[in-house]
Image 1 (tube, rainbow, N blue to C red):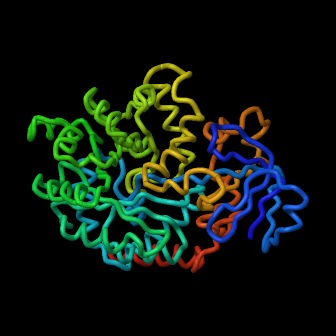
Image 2 (tube, rainbow, N blue to C red):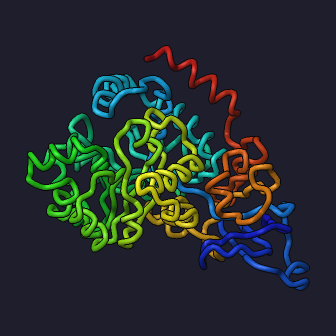
Length: 423
């Protein structure tokens, strides 16, 4: 058992109260939370005791939309609008990818996730055997979202993958989806709808990322992407959309009534000049919101601190109102919200019996002092330098700048750079 003591705890189970106390981890689960008695301490045996030195233990961040292996295109095709970036640069390069590339560049992404306090990714990509192996080898948690589109995949393959990857490891799960309405034939999407109905599963897709995407969908079907998906019965068992920038009033109503998740990606939407999702309006309406980084080809960082700052900052600028979209709301989106958007209901808060997906935030840094309000410090002045420890499923994978994986970071960097010759 691992004991965290002499620190502050933000459980996020009951608001944003921060308390003093301890957290004990037994194998992959949280065993104890609170202030132990002398008898409880004497009766317990610890293989490791970690003195937090007054630092903060909290639930880890969950990256609820990304394409991990796209680290291979980091800073490759920048300063371009989304459609040109996607069709002229990204798709031709992705056609050259092999399984070994997916493995290598996913490992690179995992390093960045861990140093940003992220312990799970909601990932949409392909060559899934190699992707899954990379995550299992690293001890990292991932939820796969089907990327089926006109260039690859099918409802038949989706069903096969759903049955294959759910249950392959406690770290791996699989959700139905498609890349986007504009890249996927309606017959294919209807096939995925049948799967969602058959297995009573949620559906996820890129949705209303750009104005052009929405207008072209209306031209095709006289419906927005959200209306199109909803009318096909894809949302009967929940799900959500990635980006959700150009939502109509009816889109918002559908998301609210169906309990869907709007997964915002402010860094990517800013860099590609796609627009600003109206998450303030979503908050007011009670729409569920989560946060993702998107891939390193469009962001270009996989840094949850930057996403949180942009999520609140862009809303304040959009409305010219510094009081909206509070730091607490955004911190909740990046942790509890993102976990639940991914279906990781046992990884969302620090409570007995839940998965030990935890991070330690170093409060003994200049950007965290003085301590007026810790949660606001995390969102407004926090950065990756404040991530002192990252634990996934009860295993410490990152601590004080050192990674504890199946291979060294230098080996991962070397392989990633050596493979560039393949492109």
